[in-house]
Each structure stands twice: as C-alpha cells, then as structure tokens.
Image (cartoon, rainbow, N blue to C red):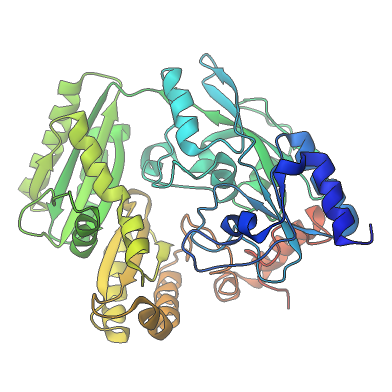
Length: 476
C-alpha cells in the first residue's frame, strides 16, 4: 500500500466512513490528554465496533508497519493514551465497543466489551443486585479496557483488591491481529501460564484488550462512614490497624486527607463545607460495609472510634447519618484530583510504600518539598489502607502554574521518587508509567527487570507498533 490515502481507505472499509476520523477538528480530542499536558497527532482516529474489526485493523497496521495507540476514555494522568508528535500512528479508540455481554448471578461474573465505562459496569452489576467494587473518580468516562491496561486501583483496594484481582478472563487482539481469549469466568484454571496477566498493567504495549469477565460480589446492605481527625499520619496507621483488628473485612476504605487537600476541594466545589471543625491537619475517611444490619455496622464503627479515642489516635469524628451523608463525604474525597487539575500547578506523585513507612515518608518528603519549593501547598491524600499516597505539592496561590512547574517539577518529583525508592516503595502505585515516568524506570528498575520487560515486548510485538514511546525506556 503505497500512499496514506490508500491506507486510510483500507481502514475506512473495515470500520466505515463515520468511524475513521482524519480531520484535525475531529481528532484533537483524541490526541490531547486529559490534563492538556501531552499533545500529539495521528494519521487517523479509528473507532471499531467489534473485536473482529479490531483484529482486521491490527492486521492491516502490522502488514504496513503503522503504529497504533490504544485508547479508552483518555483519562490517563501520565500521557499514556495519546500519540506523540510526528508519531505516524493511528489512535484506536474503543468507545463504540460498549456492550454488556452477559451477567451470571450464579457464577457472579460480568462479561462486557472493553469500551464499557466503569460507571456502566457498576450500573450493570447494580441492576443484577450485585456489586462491582472498583471505585475511582473518573468512573463516568474511564473504560474497562483502560482500567485493565493500567491495573486501576481506587478507593476499595483495601477490601477487594485492584483490577488485577477483579478479573477472571480477558479477550485481547495481538499486534498481528490474532485474537487471544480466556473469557471463561473460571476461578480455578491451572493449565499453564496465566496469559491474561501479561496484558493487565501493560498500558497497551502488548495487545489491545477488547473484552473481559469481571468478578461480582454481594451488594452491601449497610454502609457506615466517618471523617476522623487524627493527630498525624502515624496515628492514622495505628487507627487502621485497630479497625482491621475489630472489624476485619468490613473495612472497605481508609483514605488519608491533609488540611491543604480539604481546603482546596471545598474551595473548588463552592457549595461544600469541611466535615470537621477547626481545620485539623490530618483527616481519615473510613468506610465500613456489610451484608448485615445497619445498626450492627454503625455500632462496630462507633466501637472503633471510641477505642481510637482511648488510645489518643482519634481527636474528633463526624459520622454519616444517612446514605446522602456518605455520598457527600465521598464527593469531598473524589473531587480532590479534579480540584488540582482545574487549579493547575500540581506535581503529581502517585507512590506507594510499605504501610509502616507512610509516616516517615510523608514527614521526610514534606520537608524536602518545603526546602526545594517553599510555600507549596501540601495536597496529600489517598488510599492509606493499601500504602498508596497521592503526594501532590501544589503551587502557592499567588504563583502562576507554569512558572511553578517549570521551576520545581523535575527537582521535586525526583526527590520524592528517590525517597520512595529508599523506602522500598514504587514510583507509580496506580497511575502507570506512560510518558511521564518512562525514562525514570532506568533509575528504579534493575537491568534484569528491564531486559525481561523488553523480551516480553519483542515476543508479542516484534515490530514495536503498539503504544510507541510509552512505559518502556529505550534499550541501551
């Protein structure tokens, strides 16, 4: 195929004229990332409607050496879902593949196409009187395929695990167009390598996930939540241990929130008030859930809080009196990320360290930031229950966003990552690597790890066509 025109014509024959976009006005939303930090261009944006169409597109691109950037809801915070400039790539967006294929309430599984949004998956489970427990702030726009490709985490990992723990099977199209499928919904299948795990967390560099079988759970009949003031992150860690000891698996979420994070989100929302008086320096949002009676769960939460007060770990608490209160509490937590994006000038460090090291990490990292970038607002929050801290220094209110990022982004992010590495942590807990952290992997992955990652990449994608420039640093 000798010309671009002929190639586009071949794509159009596969997906139809309305699903092969080439005009800049039609493609710009697919070539610019969510935070408007990464922009690229594409030969075309292709919108397949079936796995067979994905297969045909990939076979065509493989035959002619055309690169492909897989894309779901384009909510990546790391530049992992858009092409780079002059990449010569197409964007393959799966939003048209948005059908729920089957709900099995005996096997407790949900089978769906990869373009179903997370909110759509949760709604399908809810309609069947089941729960799909993944919860993240972008659930209205992020898609299941992207959740799998990035191994999404969220606020309920403490109880249910991340996306890797919530999937029983996937279907994926390989770079040459072949289709791999394990859509059997089995909880036990000991017949060799668990190949689906290669694609989960691979950020679209090994194959394009087109469908999945997800685990469902019983719907909780009771939910109890509280915003709790604690003296410091060390007290929060102690309170978490107490909650797990007294309530076990009923502890669904345990989220840390700093005073700067709470002030930012309340200012951003406008109509929200802090749940606790006195602007406590540190707060925890605790949620318990159960299939039993509400009164029993409320009593259990009260028991934990009273025991925490006796130990001096709990200074104050606001308990949700209704489901609307629970939702209001979660609105405050979930809107912190968007508040930063709209404010601009946030250095996003999505890190994880062993739970026992979280207090030391926060103290040392905060000291480093104030030395390197004095006056930064310390927007610190996240999933303390699984060791994941969103440590996001934010520009002072009187400093322009671009000026702050130009002066401090590199030095602050590298200082934080180096501290995380010394504490045996990870520089990416749930956001992935994308472009933003790609080259940093050389500093924090061993030569053996990087060599193995490249060997897997070459085995599945020998022409290096899938998601070029993402996740894997250049060899050598």
